Length: 257
Ligand code: 2AM
Ligand code: CA
Image 1: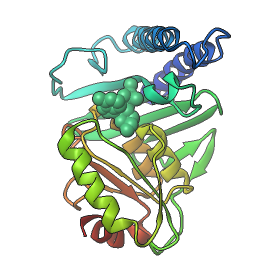
Image 2: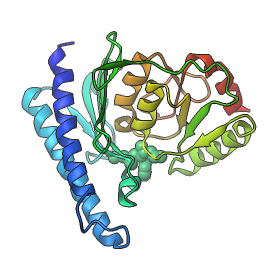
Image 3: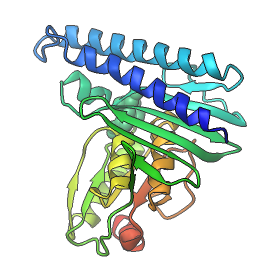
């Protein structure tokens, strides 16, 4: 894979992230005035998306872009960029400082490159298959944790009924042995798993653009990535579990009760 795909993704994520930060720090973005903040979020999301698309299509006009604001049914191309110009929308609306730009490049159904950028902390996570995962130029790896007990696990609440009920069941069987967090941005939860500060993360019914970038970063940092039941991860199904190998098997058992 030519290096300049990753380079273009990094440039695009930094530009998109800069736009998000500008809106997030906008003085009249007050949590109280909901209508204002929803409008600001929409503008931030759209402007970030437009900037990212112009950079990527400018350099790679032949590679399709699958984005959140795109058509409803998700086409399945041989190769594509998956763009989430603002991952953690609800956090952003409430001025909760935990959101990111998430970009993934997949080819022949394989994860090839991923970039996740947190513009508030300036944490730039990136990876390309076979070359390892990085945070701001430093190599990163998953944690050395070897037991679910005492680990830090993160879960997400999907917005569809079936996934939500499954998550409640999972939590009942997992809560006995560990503490749980819900952070609200799949790409950052995957990136902080790659960094080793989260030991495992799972969520159901996500979209390809939520996951395509973070999955590459997590895998290249040594995480095991699968469906929460231990089956094969499917980008288009959107059910994910990413965990450091030391707790992976035990976590699959804990989640599935
Ligand atoms: P988003 O902020 O880009 O929508 C939070 O649980 C995670 O789920 C976030 O990564 C969020 O991405 C994603 N998500 C997927 N579908 C969603 C939806 N319908 N509404 C809100 N968040 C959703
Ligand atoms: Ca989004």
